[in-house]
Length: 229
Image 1 (cartoon, helix red, strand yellow):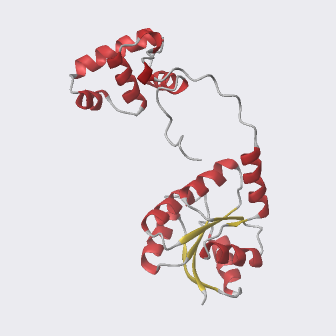
Image 2: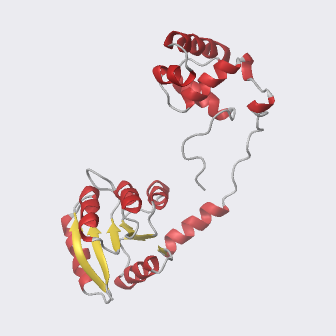
Image 3: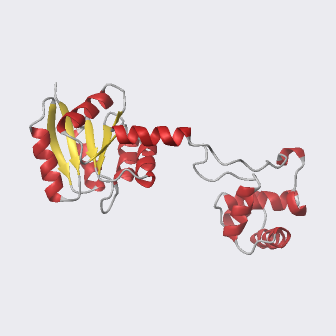
């Protein structure tokens, strides 16, 4: 049975060329073509393809965001990235979004077929250069970690912060506004502002961004996505 494929690429000449190439390959049936990520998601909803061959840098909705939405809402459709770029800023967001394959546009027809077949069988379809990049990342020696401060639960309160000031600092690091902090802690906004002024003075920071960094550096809060391995 042929794999039903949607092609997503914002450059019409490239998109039409990929569609033409795929039409010559055994085991693949092109059922749709999209000019951006938004249209790709719509076509997946309409056509339920097996695989989307996804470009990354597209208007309206880029390939990584389209991949995330497709894998969240239509898990029966796999995504193979087909792009010009294989730098870290392109590769890793796409894989985190749920892409199971990653090829560059110099891939030949046989390589595309192998990648499509691989993701449909539950494997991954990565070009050799991407596999090398992932291996390099895994084997890189991480920089030495700074010594961790004692856990807050053991009574560690840096720079003389009170427990309430520490609570406010952690909520700032989570991105909450003053009204949201007030509701969370059941205190007034004026009290929140007073705690913020106090903790700014004690920690030597001058704005919320520096307060967030202070919380991250001292292990009082974790940056978003820090649990991704």
